[in-house]
Image (cartoon, rainbow, N blue to C red; front, side):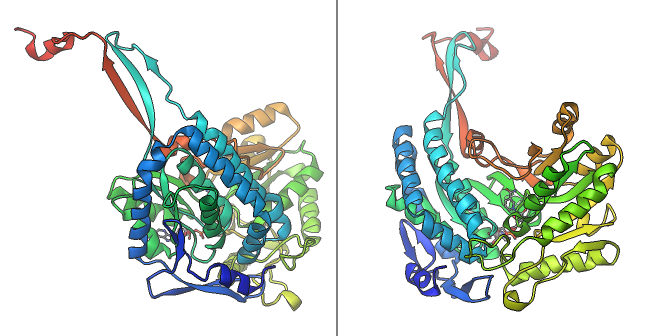
Length: 504
Ligand code: NAD
């Protein structure tokens, strides 16, 4: 792990990245970045003020004409260089992401960092595939075509659970399409978003195309959403804050892209491969210490497999090794903060009154007592409408419930206002087909749960929001369509003028 001082040195100039340079905030308010594995403060920085947000938006406005007029090939080449810089810095990104979030080094080196490099490489290619769909003589007298245009300055707000990947998911499609951007990371985890922006500059992406304001939601976030020079808000975070953001964005009629919370069902039919379902459930519930919007949270298991599933999941959870995130043998790190750990513990304590905690349900002591750790937790016997079954816990907690008929299982899986992700486990082709049709979620896996891929869209239904990250579908969010119509007749008095001059 990097010691605190290299990080302090790296961000000695401040934690705001505006116009291609790091500088301090000007709010007079300071924020600690804390290692959740130990509680140690890694560095302290001055938060962004509304004036800092104004400066970042001004830098993005100034960069927009040049960047939006760069050819697709020029933007693509810049993004290819960007991917190469990220790959060369993979180790520093992995160590910094691990220490600011408490993520096990296995996770950051196997998922966060390579996923980000791949996403950058994907958008380097996709930048050359932006196209309008139509060109032709639709009226007979005109040639029409569609121009796909960049929007302008995008304002993005990201959560703390995957700070590097969320920065990449927001920044890459926006700039590949010719926009410029101001991103506000979560104030407790700004470091890898700042490093990502620095890498963009190092790759030759012009100053002002990518700006980072490290500030709080109510100050920097709300100002960015309300800013009249920002044309779009792209937000990833909780549904409650997303609702507030949507209300604020309405005042300036901004385009919105909302990636919100989730409560993913994990539906196991009685013909499923039990070993695969048990391993899949534990991995999908515990990834990133359960702080994943698509994590498996509600396992519905058909009655004949239910007892064996519960026994298998509990036994496997008990083998999971909690420990120092920097140790390559650590399976599960702490939660992102002590506050998040206490929030998760609160959900489990309230559930205990009516449900059974089969395993976990407590923080470890001993050498891990100072960290924000919580043991993998399996809960059974919960009421279907209780808080632990319906609310987003965002921790290493899985609830298992039995069902009898396929109809009942599918109904329970869909019984949530969220709709981000779901999985079904079966060896029956027809059951799988029915599940993919009926599960109401932006992503449905069959016999797996979690993998994402740069080429495919990620986004929710219902209270999980709307719009897509990743893939060429994300360009629908970050571009606008212009219909251009040329007259082909060269006639001064056109036929349609009858509607005004008809009797003359
Ligand atoms: P959060 O909603 O508390 O915060 C998200 C971001 O919004 C942070 O940067 C925060 O500073 C900012 N913010 C807070 N109040 C704001 C306000 N009034 N105006 C503007 N911005 C404001 O979420 P979190 O706790 O950081 O992250 C966890 C949540 O994110 C979970 O609900 C999770 O499901 C969701 N999430 C969703 C996806 C997805 O793709 N759908 C991905 C990751 C995380």
